Image (cartoon, rainbow, N blue to C red; front, top):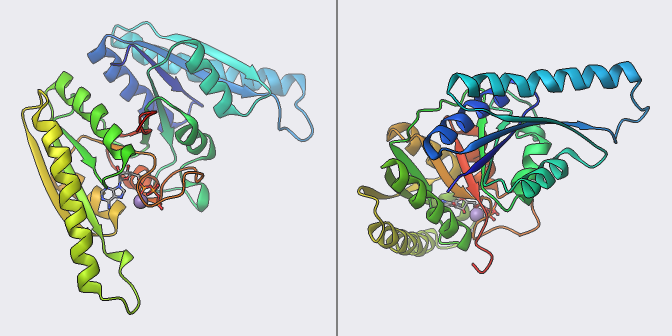
Length: 290
Ligand code: ATP
Ligand code: MN
């Protein structure tokens, strides 16, 4: 399923964690690793001097070499590149992925220690939004426990979550992991003077249905262990709490879900999980006809 894995790196600590995740996946799938640093030539208001450009290139070469060194320790020869382009960084990364027939992108994000709106990092956010192949995120505090023993798939009944489940099943089959399905009844949706009890009951019923459909699919696969749970609370917190409590090693989910608007970069549940999760998060798009 993963033959070529791309790690866009800026030499930061989260990118190093992403590199290790990519190398573990590459070992398991006998995949090639590509490490790239993108030197954006546009967007500098006063331009860069020759020395500054050279210094940036040197940093980029160091960053990709660091990933290649780690890969070499695992017996994998990584392909490295420093790409110079005036396009935005995420576009250069996606063009590279396209040209090299990449199957997954593994990228570091800023973790819980960041500040403000840009917690995820804008390059990562754009990549998550625009990539048609799975994107795996890790931040500084992410622990990569490989091979994954438990994979969590949060389901909301959307086509995107359906696609995420396909990805999770394939992954779990390959490494013999258990699949955990979780639906969170979003209690935050019940506010004001609506009849909260009735609304919650309806939400719960819809969640149970989504879980039933998902667990039928897992049971028809070669996955040997499947667990289904329904809890209530704020979804991204509940998903991360479940992961902590059930020894989950990776979360596989959609970039969008049932309740959002397609044009937002990233659904709020996905964004919350990507920021908070202590394990790698695989995000997928809906299948084209989904
Ligand atoms: P938003 O909810 O922010 O308006 P959205 O619905 O498009 O936008 P998310 O809710 O973030 O996007 O959905 C992304 C993924 O999160 C889904 O594909 C699914 O995997 C998971 N998810 C969303 N809501 C729930 C939930 N209530 N319970 C379990 N998983 C969920
Ligand atoms: Mn939603």
